[in-house]
Length: 208
Length: 402
Image 1 (cartoon, rainbow over the protein chains, first blue to last red):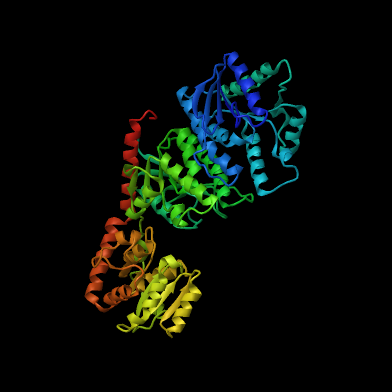
Image 2 (cartoon, each protein chain N blue to C red):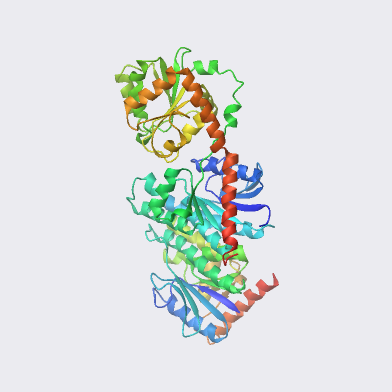
């Protein structure tokens, strides 16, 4: 199985807890003989490297340096994420089983790749705009929510880390409950649970 | 190379959505390309009352769901709209029976969509730069302007070829983004002569009498009433021209200089000789251009100068200032008269010369019309553009992407 993980943070660039989680996940997947690629952002450590753990990492930077907000930064960076993912796809003779996207930032790239090449994606939710900016509905927040909505709509499967988050996704975005898998990083079966979802999504892709 | 060649045009405006010059440009270019056996798919923003898919003059037009929530600001809206455009264009291109050979983007307004599509489909991207942020703003003064300019730089970097509509724009774009010379190619803007020829049989005397007396020559200015268009130079030249020839000056367009111009006219006590017609509809404009005894384009800054071309197509003699794209469109005393920019005496001389020498006027009008047909005909422009696509695809076929 060949998998690409999209995450806007990854060591050595640690913003929150996501970076360490992706590091752990990618390392575990590589140990399970899954060809694991991580596409992430970095200001100056750009290009493709193979980590000691066997994970292949591509770090991209934003070609546009001046920005007026997080949205313009994210929406331009997505093209570089697409370029990196497309390079992996074409180098692998157009065979990628799935893309696992963490949070909303790189949903646009995943959606374009799905529409252009048929690679299914999983939207793995760390947090939601509704919780990050409670009670605000400025155009800025609405735009992020619309990208989150697009992710839920286009994803083959959604994962949440807790049942509470799953219920919140159902409540806020009216996503069918059965589309969301709860994968607890604390559980002993964590890696197995991830692989179960990957198999389901990749199998679904093959049968299409 | 497979036949027919297929291109996906990305444009934020397409008729009936008309905001600026890109909309008619993409319409005429696409239509003429499809008449030259190029399969054209236009992907553009939606517009009230238009279908999401239709075929217009052989061109497949797809209108995307442009982002319609309130956006934080115009530039952020552009990138949000591009997200949708890219998503829908990707699904469209993947679902077509034939593959798209080339993506052709028009201005930064579709930059991120074009760049993303290039990479996911691994097909060449071409861009037509109609304008630049640094040119529009005369420098980069705010974060937004810098961001837009950097997006333009990125787009021209990602493009296989960068098309500009005049030699002036070629050198401007080359300077603005530091591009290698062989990346730039000049393809002029076109003008539709047919809409003017269609009026040939019509008696325009009644129409003309709404603007000028039969004894008055009709001097026409068309453009926004802003400083860079140099309309004040023409207004200041009015008394000098009237010393030699009886004329009526018809000013079409609106803009912030209107009051100032009116005051100049009043102070000269020439209200009966200068008519501010304001913004007029297309039918009126075409007829005015047909009736004009001379069309004046006194611009101080002009990337292309489509108004001069339109006048030439309407068989109205042109007097233009020798600057920007106008310098290239007009050949002095062959297809029109060029005068010194920002020089009232020079402009008065040019207008007087055209109005007082009937033989000269006929000579430049005939030459100008022939030049328009030779150089600025959409048919010819489509053929040039098709050759660019073919040469890019030839280079592409030898690359590791093919």
